[in-house]
Amino acid sequence: MSNTKPDIILPKGMLIGNAIVTTRDCIGVIDPASGKHFADAPNASQADLDAAVAAAKAAFPAWSARTWADRAEVLTRYIEAIRADIDNLAALLVCEQGKPFQKARSEVTSGLNFFSAYRGMELPVEVIGDAGTQRVEVRRIPLGVVGAITAWNYPVLLALWKIGPALITGNTLVLKPSPYTPLSVLRLGELAKDILPPGVLNVVSGGDELGRWMTDHPDISKIAFTGSTGTGKKIMASAATTLKRITLELGGNDAGIILPDFDVSAQVEDLFWTSFSNCGQVCASIKRLLVHESRMDQVCDGLVDVAKKVKIGAGFDSGVEIGPMQNRMQYDKVKKLIETAGDVGRIIHSGTIPNRDGYFLPLTIVRDVDPDSELWREEQFGPILPIRSYRDIDTAIAEANDSNYGLGASVWGVDLAAAEAVARRLHAGSVWTNTHPAMRPDIPFGGIKQSGYGVEFARYGLAEYTNVQVINVKRSG
Image: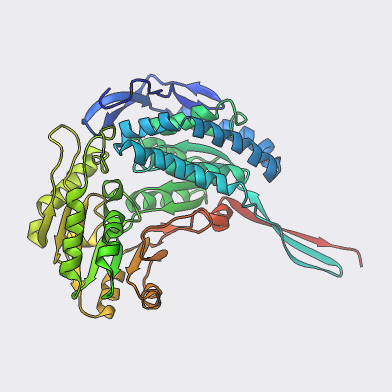
């Protein structure tokens, strides 16, 4: 196994009804730092999915009948088991996702912080009226069996973002990780085996066909999905046949606007990482930068200076800050964007990469980019940042809003009142000032336009895992 710790614990199979299930057919898992196969994961059949859904359905009555506090107590023990396995989970992430070990460890920690916070976010009963002969209250009740489908850029984080809300609100869950990064999520299933009641959490792995079976399945009440806009549209269409509830966290082409009073020396490093963190493979990262013409040269020079200091390499190597692209398909797409960037703008930095196999790409910064180019208009999802200058703020806002996406946006400057005034005019689900992105479990997050449907996090996100039930009591007069 390339670039792995010798004591890594690979998952033994899928979790279905608290049984570890293997399959004859397998999917190969590639180490992106070498481009070579290093492990196998089960490839679930339709019968495997049916068994997982049946286990979840059978577990739902007892799990949903528990109090919030009872469920929180069980989930606390599960959180502790995950925390005890953090180094192994991080090593699995390095092997299958490619990110540096410390970044992988931070991913698990962040996911656990969100998961932990949901335990204390109980959805209270709302009393609409209680007078005379009538009492009316609104309750939030669980949906039933939830199907979750997650992406390959943050496998553990995205899984925990869905396991926590689904289970604490009383649902049971069937979870499918990306076929590119199944191992760490399968390990999350194994860790639940002796803690959660059978069927409360089921983890199945497989390809796109498994995802289609989930969205078509009549006994799944909701699909929670993180991934591309194209796949999200297909899920939405398929879910309509059974009127499934859906939450879709999709792609983004987030714009960052740099105001004339931007403090280059103090803020440029933060600005750099909002675009290049996780090798640019972040849904809500800055993917287009609009810089006031008075700051254009300084900002570009500052970003290049930061890029020159960043070490790219395999995730277990010392001092590495950015790893490879996760998979060959995305690598080929971004590599083409980098190779043609000089045709649509001026490349001011294209860094070095390790002299080794693997899906490594240079950090690339391109200024004066054609606004009609693919590089500007489409989500890159890789280590390349296009930059344009603007003269007046109305032009910058118009360019930022000229997109089918609306996941996030940000405004950067010293005058916070001016920055906030610009932020209020941007068309995005989340708009930040002097940071991007900044997520907390108590702040809702979701996209508008073609960047998503519904929200995650906070009580708003928990509510999406429930139905509204009105209890209307007529008293005798």
